[in-house]
Image (tube, rainbow, N blue to C red):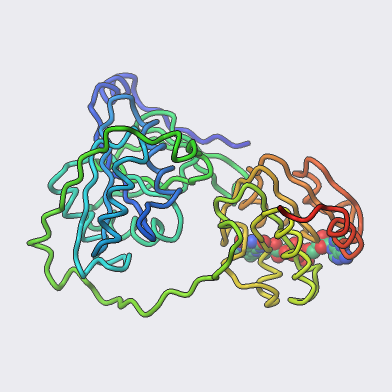
Length: 349
Ligand SMILES: Cc1cc2nc3c(=O)[nH]c(=O)nc-3n(C[C@H](O)[C@H](O)[C@H](O)COP(=O)(O)OP(=O)(O)OC[C@H]3O[C@@H](n4cnc5c(N)ncnc54)[C@H](O)[C@@H]3O)c2cc1C
C-alpha cells in the first residue's frame, strides 16, 4: 500500500501539539434526532486531541429542531455545547444558507477544526463553506493521527495517503462514519445535558438563501435498516438479470434483517434505485457481514465495501476479483444458491 507523507520540522509539530483545540461539528438531524453519522463526527472530533472543546451545530426550524438539539445535548459525553440555528431560511439543509451559517459561526467562534460526516449532507456543504472561509478541506478521513495529520483513501481506496494540514484555521474535515464507530446511543448517554444556545441570526439576510430552492424529498419508505448503518448488507449485481429476479435479494435481506445493496451495473440496468448503489460513486459501507451475489468485484465497487468485517461472495466465475477480498467464497450459480438459502434459513422472528 502506498503511503505518501510530507513531514515538517519537529518544532512545528511540538508547537501544534500545545495549541488548545476547539471543534465545530456540523450535524444533520431528522425526526427530532441527530443521525448516527453526525455522532461519528463527534467521535472523530474526540480523537483530534484530549484538550478539545466540541460544539455541535444544528440548523432548521420549529419543534423538531428543538427536539434534535435536546437529543444532541445528551447523546455523547464529548459534546460541550449545542448551537441551534433556528430560521425559516434553514428549514431544509441546502448548501448555500448552511455554508453562510458555518461562515458566520466560525467568525464568532474561531474554531480550530470543523468536522462533518462525508455523506451527501457533508459533501454538499463542506466545499462551499471552505471556499467562503478560504481554506482547503480534507475529505473522507478514515484515521486521525494527530490534530493536523490524517489518513484518507486515494485511487478508489487502493492506497492510503497520510496528509498533514498546514493551512490556516479552521482545518475542515469530512470523515467516513464507518471508520469512527460509536457505542450505542444509550451507552453514550450522559446525565448532565450540554447547554443549548441559539445562534444569533440577526445578520443572516435574505441573500444567505442563494439561488437553490427546495422542491421535495423523495425517499424509500422501507422497513429495512439504512444501508449506511446496517449490520448486514446483501448486495446483488448485474448477474441478477432483472428487477424481478432482484426481489430474491430483497427476500434474503428480509430474512436476515439486512439492508439491500447493488452494484452500479445493477442500478444502471434499472433493477433497483440508485440510492442502493455501493461503491466509489455510491454509499460506503462497513457492515459486520457483507454478502455479494453475482458481483464481479470491480475496483469501484470494492471502494465502497472492502472494510466490511466479513465478506461472503457467490459467483460462478472462480477467477472473479471479488474472491480476492472475500473471507468466504462459493463458486456457484446464484439462481441455485439463493433459493436454497431462502428455503433453509429460518423465518425472521
Ligand atoms: C468512474 C466510475 C465509478 C464507478 N462507481 C461504481 C460504484 O460506485 N459501484 C459499483 O458497483 N460500480 C461502479 N462502477 C462500475 C464498475 O466498474 C463495474 O462496472 C460494476 O461494479 C460491475 O457491476 P457487477 O459486478 O454487477 O457486474 P459485472 O462486472 O458484469 O459482473 C457480474 C458478475 O456476476 C457473475 N455471474 C454471472 N452470472 C452469475 C450467476 N448466475 N451466478 C453467480 N454469478 C454470476 C459473473 O461471473 C461476474 O463476475 C464505476 C465505474 C466507473 C468508471
